[in-house]
Image (cartoon, rainbow, N blue to C red; front, side, top):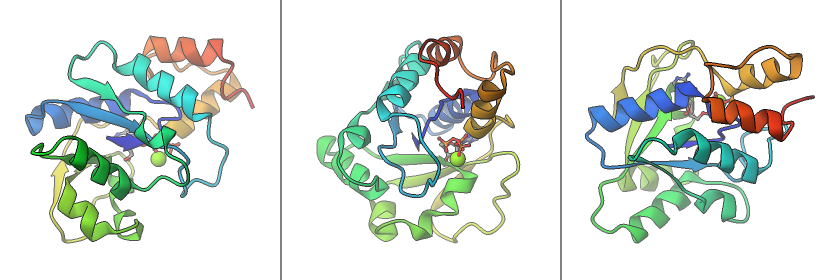
Length: 184
Ligand code: ATP
Ligand code: MG
C-alpha cells in the first residue's frame, strides 16, 4: 500500500485491513513515498512519516513498513518499487492497494503498463471520490467502510488546535505532538 502518509490515519489502516482480508493477503507492506512528485505542498520529512507509519502498524502482525521509497534518491515512481519488490520476492503475487483518487492518476504514472503487469491494482472506495471513470483495465475495486478522514484534514486540525484523537492511532497523535509536526 503506497501513500504519502503525512500522517497515516485510520482510513489507510481500514483500507489495508479490508484488502488483506478480502484478497487473503499474507502481508500488507506500507510504502511511504519518498518525494511525491505530484505534491506541490510542503511534505513532512520522510523519516517522520516513516516513523508514524511504523507506530501505526506495529500491533498488526500482517502489517510491515518498507523504507525503499524513502531511501531511494530522486522522485518516487510506483513502477520502480514494484520492480524491486518483484525482484526481492520472486514467486510472490503482488497487489498494489490504493484509493479511488490515486487510481484515477494511474494513467499519468511512469510505465503504467509495466506496473500493471507486475501487480494487480486494488482500488479501495473513498468518500468523495466516485469510481465512475476508472480505466477499463484489470483493477480490482474494493468497497470499504466509509471513513471521511484525510491527512489534509488532520494537518489542518493540528494547525488549528482541533482534536485528532480517534482519527489517527494514539501513538501517531503522540508522535505529532512530541515532534511538533503540522503546527503551521
Ligand atoms: P492527503 O490529504 O495529504 O492527500 P490522504 O489522506 O489522501 O492525504 P495519502 O497518503 O495521500 O493520504 O493516501 C494514500 C492512499 O490511501 C491513497 O491511495 C488514498 O486514496 C488512500 N486513502 C486515504 N484516505 C483514505 C480513506 N479515508 N479511505 C480510503 N482510502 C483512503
Ligand atoms: Mg491524498
